[in-house]
View 1: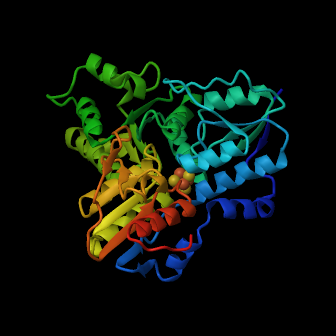
View 2 (view 1 turned 120 degrees about the horizontal axis):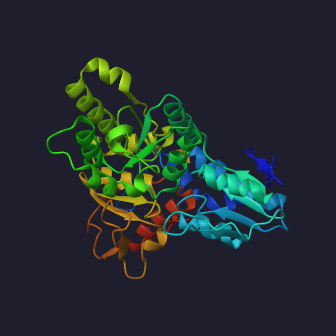
View 3 (view 1 turned 30 degrees about the vertical axis):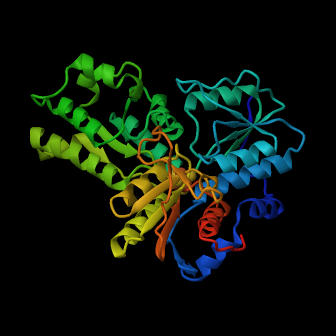
Length: 404
Ligand code: SF4
């Protein structure tokens, strides 16, 4: 039996809106927004970035999850992984009886308990073609919330595969979206992919590709990219024609630099004509990620705030990149949720590095004694109420009470 498939919700937006507003909106944030994103509370001036928080893809995914619950109040509902990387939102969904299926270390999901009576939600990141196929075969109701911007990347890498180009994807091989994107090429006979984490890894690939004297050997290459490449990947064969794409939430400047570096190496070694026919690139950072990154760049370049708080899951790619962009300009605290700010002790728990696995640390006496300007932004998976709560907690430490 094939699954029943829904990609546009159930037409219940109006019914679930009051619930979603009650769970995720913030009157305090609305007040600051209405004052051109700058508001003063005692000796603390809050500056909100021009764009921050929930993006269109997350809005839609959360909306569809609530619609699914409303539509099927008595059925088991499962989520493949997390709907988005935000613990607060995920906890709210758990409270509504939605069960999460997490992958093992190799990214494999166990769907054996799913039956035709169940409802399964596909998150905004999408799932691999293999997982989609297995889910279809269960006969369940599938609610697909894959973001349209992710679907655009899929189209791009599918085109690469059709035309005989290996998709070189700037992303994290363990990230659900990168796995799903990479899998799209496997529907094509000679579809290949290689996931590179950053500019350093792209350099390794580029040197191999052009036969640079300092390139690593074939065995080292295969060892290094074993988990990040398609089965049977052969660097001697599969780097001849490459097309660059990226996970939608990477640092835009780094994605551009990777594409430019690989093309430059190819053109310098084999000539411009060769590069024109053997290299393709297409920026697939989504507009929401781009706008949030642009907004913090603007905030940091005008007059950086004294302190910056960036809110979002520690495993949220776009949040990590926002914090990274701020660190060179202002003292920055990347916090997972508002609860990281302790109004009792005045301490703040935060992740001080870009690495999503870096340990959380606690900072004491982190606020200036006198007046200060606090900049705030949040990743695309952070709801307004978490941001409003964080503002209120900062102010509470200063003895300023505000309505949430
Ligand atoms: S960050 Fe971009 S790609 Fe991801 S869900 Fe939001 S809009 Fe879609």
